[in-house]
Image (cartoon, rainbow, N blue to C red; front, side, top):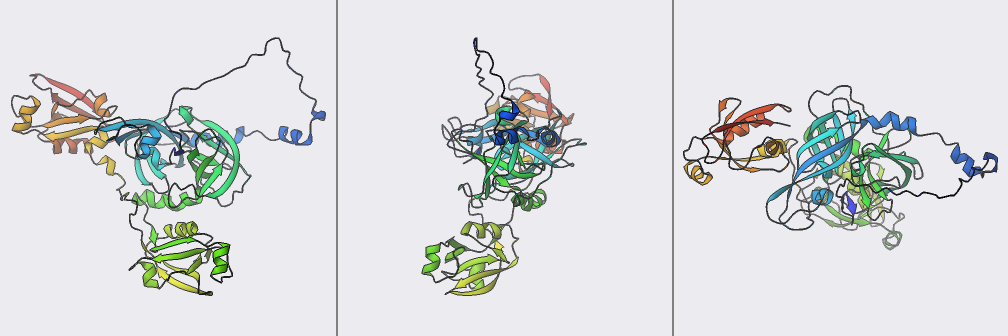
Length: 482
């Protein structure tokens, strides 16, 4: 459910259809006099232009262009979020790359950019383009697949960056005007206006759904872009759409983003609190059947053995109505609140047991990796030469030298694979080439070349001397490292 999108494939396209109608021999109808307009029409004409607001914030909205690796072991559309965002995989079992574009926005003059996880997930390289024409390579600092939030950082000399701030998403009301800016279908800095249609939407995209819903136009390519209030504050990150041109979009609320960003920036991932219970919503009928004076809360259906809840003495049919004084209106609300607390936090649960209200203290544990996502270090994707420049390497021993077509084993790093569209391909490197020097220093193994690539600063160029299979000549290649 990515664009996140319902049923509509979010492939970024470069085609725009324009329709025009020419009125033949039809004189233009005169505009009605202002005095003849209905009161509501005059009020609409009196609305101030949003141009000053747009001008004040759009420079901080960026285009995020990504080359990403996608494992395509199946034909057709795969299960990878990037398959759904960038297009389906091709047949075969090899690793492919996809190019796609999303949006983001700068929140710190040091170059911190917020976007969606599904925009940058599995990225081989990331390029961020600003509204003023500047472009920067970027790296992933942290990402959270369960809320679809990611923090990336611009690399290189960053100065004079425009920024926008995160507002209070709890303060915005249904019916308030909202503004979306992004890169839909590659149309940079596109602006759309709408209202907040609903809050706290659960669209079953993940365990922590709490989306803002808007009718401001959001399309593929808007992913990761900001949703503004009329003060110019970001109240959401645009992340999902309902397919079919229905005009329904969803945004991650800014207050949730505020809680995640510090962890993503420093740790690269989100560590969540954990109770170890299965719960369901309390309804009016269930409240009556349980002889309770409340109709909202979370009913405990199961307590995991050995979990923090079991150690605290929680029982079946306990109904949690508050945590640390914060009202719990549903099972999802309890799940979200606990997830934002640090493991080891001692929290107070207010609950009803057998009709009696009581408080119970519980020490939160660490949420296990139920979805099998796995915690990845912030710069894991840059630790390998393939992820950074798109080249796979192997040592050259006597056997591989013969297989690769080299008459003698000089040592070196044998190129076994080059990712299409990667820096390695742009440097005219190809599978079967043997790298024997890097920056005029001998290369005797794949490990030595990988270390040389890793040691090259972003934006630097690595001068490689290579041999082609069966050739007696040596060639130079300039590998630009992103």
